[in-house]
Image (cartoon, rainbow, N blue to C red; front, side, top):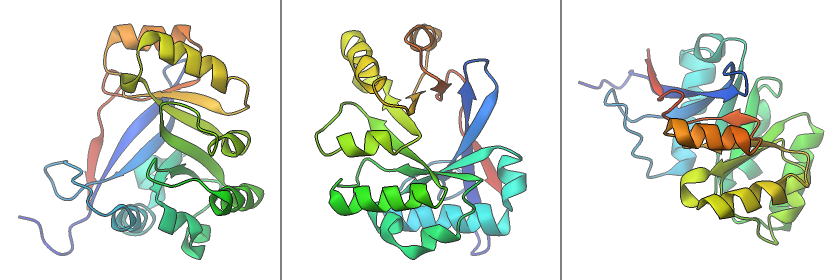
Length: 200
């Protein structure tokens, strides 16, 4: 049974082309079942930060790697985000964020402060997203949402920008092989490793 003091957090590794762990995505978990059940992005992000940077301790959660932390619009625009250690985190902008001039300006400001940024669940490039593509360090592509031709076209389009490309939701050897052939830099998904639950 869950007590008020229990801490639940999951981490899923992100691998490079040599199959070495490059980072971990830190994920909200409601309880020991390991299910996410996120109904409030802001609360989920706050819990992950409190658990990883407080109770569990960052070194025990990610070791010497970087930690990808999901960030919603409220967290992105708040000053609280600047309390995170810029050399240890990658701020992963959730796809729920409506990109406008204020968001682009804030991302530029955080980048200037030394933070790394990632775009989550990208399936295409919108006009609003364009300015962010030269600011962010990583673009996470949801490969399950795209047919092979569309995936190849999107990769070609994003290669015009400096960001590393991360294939997310890679769940089979065939998809992993295809993403390697397409030149993805980073990989995440059940084929490589499932999220592991951490508790304290």
